[in-house]
Amino acid sequence: MSLLLKASPELVKNYVRMFVNRRAYTVQSMKPRPESGRHYYYRPTEKVTGEPVLLNDETIRKHLEGKITIAHYAINPATQRCKWVAIDADYKDAMEDLLKLQYHLGQDGVEAALEMSKRGGHLWIILAQPVLARECRIYIHDLALRLGMRIKGAGLAEGIEVFPKHDELKAGEFGNAIRAPLGIHRGAKRRYWFYGADYTLEKQMDYLERLRKVTEDELHQFIDGKSISDEFTGRRRNCEPMQARVGSNGREFRILDHISSKLRKVGRNYMTQCPSCSEAGHDRGGDNLSIRIDDPRFYKCWAGCTKKMIRDAVGCPIRYPHSA
Ligand SMILES: [Zn+2]
Image 1 (cartoon, rainbow, N blue to C red):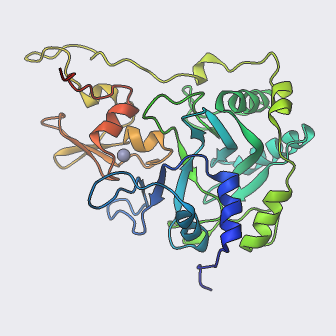
Image 2 (cartoon, rainbow, N blue to C red):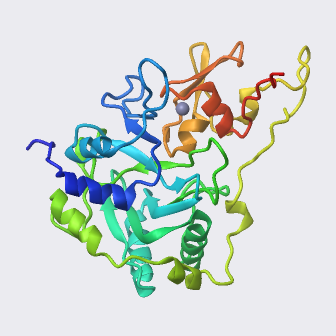
Image 3 (tube, rainbow, N blue to C red):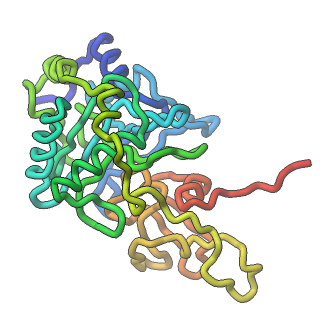
């Protein structure tokens, strides 16, 4: 059976209303990387200008029809609000945790939709109106911890991941991207549907439309008097080198000071997780960034992140000298 489907303009419009919260996005590569066999995500850019391509209805149509696969971001930086919350779990017993969450959300009158994934699944909560990312996170973190679930981050390598992963975005930040629902996973060469409806685009969208959506007022009641534990709120924001190297002024940027994931030697380079890809929820295999061993000032992300994106991701943006 062909993976390609047709998406009507109305279906596209409804999908955009439900899921699209900002126009930055990433695309999953059609071909796997030869070294790892994995499909990576990259931010598409205009051929001539190098400017980022912005998401529009046409992008969504192609995603739904199966011609491309995109990942999208939770937080709109202008408002710090989200249209949805997604909970990703891909460990052993992940489904059990997601079903447990779905049940307990239901007790609050929040109908969440469970989507299949390559391993485990994604649980989606579509909101009645955009709400503050911080408030979404307080609600889900509080519920998950009450249920005794582990949340990834804060020193835990395994656990649920909550999108949005940040309370707020600073200028130029994107937060983390997650595969947009109903598209084809290039690695698995198949579509992952929601369990709650027949496997057609129309039936799936009808199902999502019918879910009872949580309002901002309700959310405020759920999180009244609650806050998020400090360990989940911030990233390290320390741009000072650990120690000054002989021959440097002690202030130059050194990528290796900011890499916390495992380094592997491949030929003349280290391979490791790209901080920018990782921030976008990608490069789980940890091999998108190569750093020259003999001169770590040279580093490159295989998935196309620019130096600026990588510096932003490690919290040390490139500062250009002010012009007079
Ligand atoms: Zn990257």
